[in-house]
Amino acid sequence: MDGRNKPGVHPGDRLPGLPADPGDVAGSSIVTSSEIPSVPVQDLPAEFDAAPSAGAGSGAGAPSAILLDVREDDEWQLGHAPAALHIPMIDVPARLDELDYDADIYVVCRQGGRSIEVAKYLAYVGFEVYQVVGGMVAWQQAGRPLIGGDSTEAKIY
Image (cartoon, rainbow, N blue to C red; front, side, top):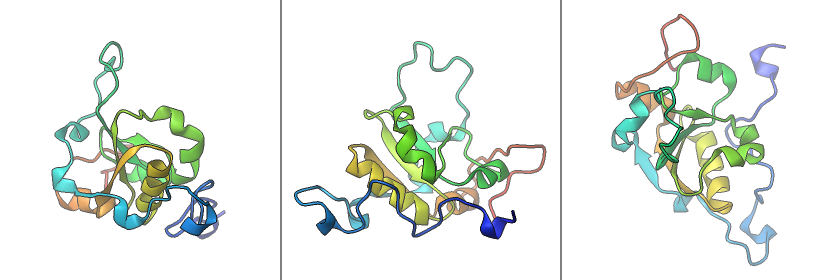
């Protein structure tokens, strides 16, 4: 199967469980894109620039902030932030238990289309979320560190 026909989620797609229209759920608190705070790459916590050290989870407590990368696996392998948690967009509803409700969740994708949908969904289910402006393209342009999944140079295309 070539890349044009691969399954997955693409900009503009909706997450399962998130109503398409606020009118779809009477009395619910649907979150709109304009209600999601946006954060420029330059203002993200410096802790996202370094991979968590071995054993960081033992006794260290839950992180106060999580950089959630919702891109597809092939995009992640090309390059990602060292401390990012990778959960592809389509998998987010099934993997909520990997996120901490007490942490600020910064959602990133390539440029922002998928991350805003995930951010709306996470806000809808009770997380404190922020969208990373410009996504991983902006991350790379700002000169923040990237690591890749193999021996090639990490690069966001």
